[in-house]
Image (cartoon, rainbow, N blue to C red; front, side, top):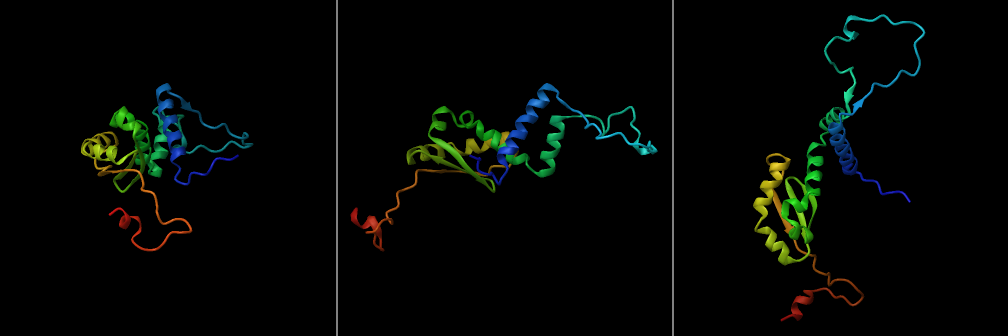
Length: 174
């Protein structure tokens, strides 16, 4: 069985971020690739190709530095930071709240959180401003502008062979 393809690349970005952190902690150096074969003729070395006493881009680089550069060039920094912070969801909202809520979507500064019940969603709305402040402290200013807490979805009454058009069940609860 093959795993489903993730078109957003968030899992790959998370793996890159994790490898970056681990590589920077251990000081792993990415060596230059060895040449496939030695040239038959010696090439003339020009002045700008010579290596000097100071480090430059041709020297071996730390894996963490290379990955940070790729993340910056591709614009993945905000998504990686967001996924890293949301993994720490229990630390941000507390263990009890984390058991009954789960962040599900982020778009244009709005974080959507699904809750087990409407009571938990209402209770968490009171702490929304504090949560926005914590998220912006971890991700950068004005990354999260609003947190929307949603309760469970109501069942649909418009399914089945005997469903009829009209106002639906609310006219029977008089």
